[in-house]
Amino acid sequence: MNRTTIQLLALVFLFTIVSENVRAQRSQDWEVSKNLDIYTSLLQQLNQHYVDDFQPGHLTKTAIGAMLKDLDPYTVYYPEADIEDVRFLQTGKYGGIGSYVHIKNDSLYVGMPSPGFPFYKVGLRAGDVILKIDDVETTGKKMSEVSDMLRGPSGTNLTVEYIKPNQINHQTVEITREQIKVKNVPYYGKLNDSVAYIKLSGFTESAAKEVLDALNEMNKETPLKSLILDLRFNGGGLLGQAVGIMDLFVPANEQIVSIKGKISSENAEYKTRMPAVFPNMKVVVLVNNRSASASEIVAGSFQDLDRAVIMGQKSFGKGLVQKVYKLSYNSQVKITIAKYYIPSGRCIQALDYEHKDARGNAVRTADSLQAFFKTQNGRPVKDAGGILPDLALEAPKRVSVVSALAGQYLIFDFATEYVITHDSIRNPDDFEVSDDLFDAFVSYVQKQEFEYKTGTDRFIEALSKQAKKDNYYDDLKSEFESLNNGIDQLKSQEINLHKEEIKSLLRMELVSRYFYLPGKVSSSIKGDKEVQAAVRLLNDPKRYKAILSGSIKQ
Image 1 (tube, rainbow, N blue to C red):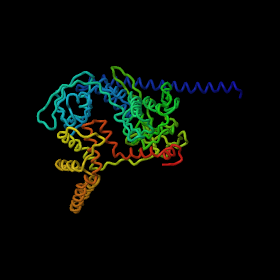
Image 2: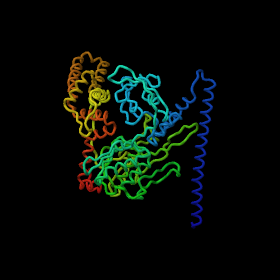
Image 3: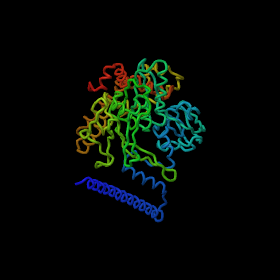
Image 4: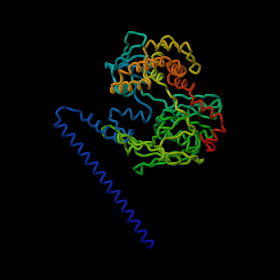
C-alpha cells in the first residue's frame, strides 16, 4: 500500500468521524427543538383548559428546577428576582443590611451585625428580635423568606420593628440597604515572630488581592518566614482567583490548572504570570471535608508542585467548572461546562453525576478505581476523591451535649445576657472564660430546662418501639426505665466533662459581641489543635522538607 493510498484512507476515516459527529449533533438539536415544542404546547393547553388559575412563571421555574436536578447540584437557574445571588457569587457583593440572622422558636434574631453597615448603623445588635419587616410579621417565616425580605437593591429602604432583650417596648427604624462586600480574608495575623496566619473564606473577585495585602501588612516590620493558609470550610469561587493566589508563591509560567469540556473553545490552561512575590516562604495549607472547588485548586496545586504541605482531612472533591450565561428576560443560568485538572494531571472530582444509584444519588468513585499520579518530586497522589492531605489530622469531633448547646442557641443567648451588664471586655487575645463565668453559664442552662438526645437515647427509643411491636415491652419496662435513668444521670455530668470545649465556644461567642467576625476568628485559633500542629511543623524545617521531598511518609 503506497503513501498516497494511506493518506486517502486517513482522509476517508476522518471524514467519516466528522460526518458522524455532525449527524449526532443534528439529532441532538432536533431533540431539543422537539421537546421545546412539546413544553410550549403543554403550557398553552394548561392555560386554556386547566380548571384553576395558575402562574406560568412559577410552573416554569418548578419545571426547570426538576430538569436541572437530574444533572448536578452546581447547574442552577436564576430568574430575574434572584440575580442578586449571581452577583454575590462572582463579586462577594450584594444589596442588603450587613448582618447574620437566625431563627429560634419561630422568632427572628439578629446574629452578628458588621460594623459600618446598615443594621449596625441604626443600633441593631446581636440578640435583638426582629418582629416585622415592612409591616410583615417575621414569626414563623422560613430563612429563605426572611432573606428575600432583607436583601434588595442598594439604596432602597425597608422598615424594621424590633425589640431588645432587656426592654419591653418595641422600636421601629427605617434602614437603607447598602452594597455589602463580604471579605474573603476575615482575619489575618502573626501567631509568633516566624509564623503568619491567614483565614481565607472565599474566592470572589478580590481574593488574591486580599491575601497579598494581608501578607504585605504582616511583612512590614520583620520579613515573614512561614504561613498557615486556612482553607477549612472554604467552598470555593472564581477559578482565576485561585491562580492569582498561586502567583504569589510559585515561579512565572507554571501551569496551575487546565479545564477540559464539551466545547473545545471552552478548554483553557491557566499559568502563573509573574515571578513569585514570596518564593521561599514555607507554607502549610489547612483543609477539611468542606474545602471545595477553588480551595482544592489551591491546595492541589501546592501539593502537586511540592510547594506546601497540606494538613487536615480529605477535601470535598469538586473538580467541576461552572460558567454563567444570560437567558431571556434578565434571567441567567450557571452551567457546569468542564472538569479541571491540577498540575499533576489529575481531576479530583469525587462524584459521578452522569451515573446514579438506585436512589438517584450520584455514584462515588471507589478508592480502588482511583488512579495514581505523581507530584514534581515524584510523590504519589490520587485523583477522583478530593485532595488527600500530606499530613492527615483527626477531624475535630463535637459531642452531643456541645452540639445541642450551640444548636439550641444557649451559648448565644447567654452571651446576649452577658453583654447587657458588660460594656466591654479585654483584648480578644487576652480574654478567657473564668471558672466563675463557666459556672454562671451552667446555672443559666439549668434554668432553661435544657434537654438533648444522644445516639444512645435514639437507640433506646428505637429498641423500645421494636419491643412494643414484638409485645416484649411490658416485660422489659423496668429495664428500659433503669437504662433511661442511668443515661440521664450520665448526661447531667456531660457539661462539666466537656468544660474546656464549651469554654472555647463561650469565648468565641463573647468575643464576637465586642470584636465581631475578626475577633471571633482570632479567638477560634486559640486552642485550635490543627493550627497548633501546623505551627509545630513550620518550626521543624527538617520534617517539613522531608515531607515535600517524599523521603518520609505520613
